[in-house]
Amino acid sequence: MALTFNMLLRDGGIDPRDVRLLRHQQASRTGLTPYAIWRDDATELARYQSAQPIDRRHYFKGRYWASFVVPPDGSTLFVGLYEIGGHTSAPSHWIDPLHRQTAAQIGRDLDIYDYGRLPEFDAYAGCLKIEWGDGKRSWNQRAHQQDKLIVELTQSFNEPDFPGYTSFICALGALLNVPASWIAALSAVRGVYLLTCPRTREQYVGAAYGTSGFWGRWQSYIVTGHGGNEGLRSRDPSDYQISILEVAGSGAATNDIIAMEQRWKAKLQSREMGLNRN
Image (tube, rainbow, N blue to C red; front, side, top):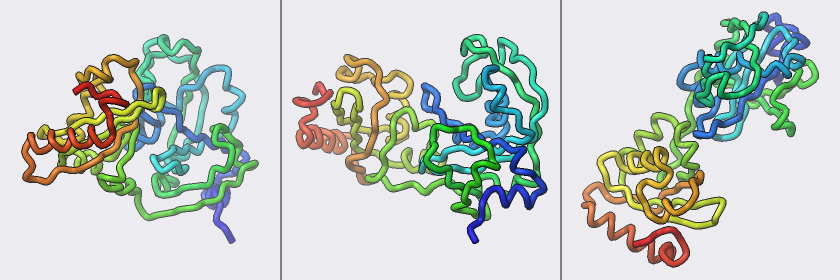
């Protein structure tokens, strides 16, 4: 017999009729996601979900919230069961952990809910994944009406493995969410990368030859949107997709990497049909 989330709730003495399922997946304008908030500090995710617009009060009449986030692989990961109490109005200076804005800047009246995490379910946090189903936009559901199938249960939380340099593909805005092990891998090597704009369908070939490798070079794009490049500076900011074209050997000099970059510009014709200007 298949194992379901409601079976887990009942085994822990929780009636599914008292539980709301919350699937947090919205990303901020900076690319930060609820998954990354939880991974780095679970209390910040709890603080994020405790604030809800007052026009959603009818959603939160359940006694418990079962919280899920969406990792980079698109799955639905359980991160905690919370007992919910009353609510008060959010003060204007309250700061949203995801969007990094105050309640006043958000411009919506918010309730702040009292909550307490149920520690007896902590063993499943980061270890249990469910099949959410077709209603990906239905982020708030009643547990007793949606008996979710458990599709994975591990002994401990593990970040996804680094896919390899030539398989790495990521939106610039999503770089904030990559695991620390990925950052270390991307900081350790240098080479040639590709930016593609999903909006204008243009491409840009660049080179990373500094001491912090690809990761260090890409940080300038996150900060400025163009990294000092004239072709990118001439366009409106975009959330470019970034990938790696070639990794330089450990003994490669800066001139060697620049020569690699020039070859890729010629292969992809990124001067004639892209955003490269030299």
